[in-house]
Length: 221
Image (cartoon, rainbow, N blue to C red):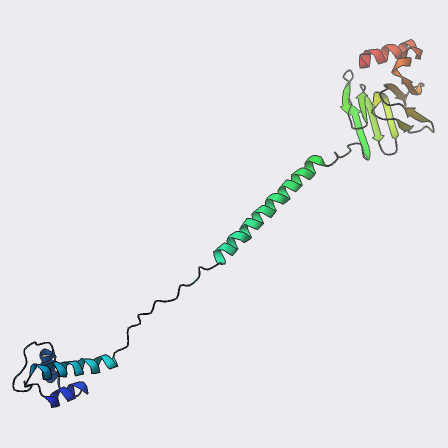
């Protein structure tokens, strides 16, 4: 099939047949000029240039511009800073809590009513409290209120105050003043005739011989 100006025009308008389109494509990519249609190499080249220019005009232009550089998102840095702050705050709270537990004053175990009971017939129970040291004799029961100084005693105890204190005994209006770093022997037999006895350990010799022997044997004085 010969390629002429009319065929080229219909090719540009996309109205030619598939056979004509194939003939034009073969002609476009054929370096040999048809002497019957185009009389010079210049006219052939000009026709090709016009055709390519027209084709190029309908094609989208290639975007040669480089896309702008987008700044790195700051979200990761913000999230990292948030978690770092949260961890630091948690550690600070933990340290403050540990410091409080370490430095706070120790709870007074003698606050309120404390019960001491020794059911043994020979063994002495030794108790170290914040405000006193106590030895509870055999078969002895004692209720001690450290705040009021009230004691309900049945049996025998040795008490060494760590500070001056006053004691009030159940069933008695008598107030006993105890001195710091002194040791006192307290006996209270509710079933016998001896009643309440309070004496400094230094004055043990002033007690009746039978009571002296009993106390010396019980507490190893």
